[in-house]
Length: 174
Image (tube, rainbow, N blue to C red):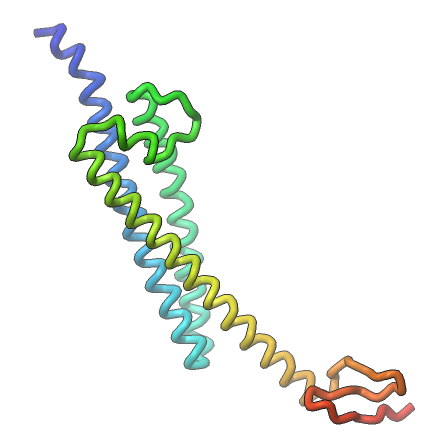
């Protein structure tokens, strides 16, 4: 009976590590879903030209990014623990390396979560890029408007005349 407990202990440790890994990835998926939602709210706030909601969404996005980074580190540590139980000799094991070596019910759940993470990561990147472009266009428009209103376009032709955005010229008095 004692020998059975000794041989089952590594298996129990592996199963606990796998359960912990699945739980970490599920939390990570939830965070990425929240991040995608926050990025979509940010997009709507920019389109509606609402500075306060934009600032609030920026703060929420940063909070979620920080949380996902922490969770990714936890997941990497737990994946390393699982891989050491499985005999995988690498410092940074991937789910693709772990999945073929675990029981089917763990493998299936890890495959599902991996696919969800990949999909969410791609959607977050695309949404973030869309928002970045939108914010850059808005910033460019505001900057150009301020420069035009202040008469500080800063582009001069060879005769010393300031060139405006619509190609009219303003003669600089010297």
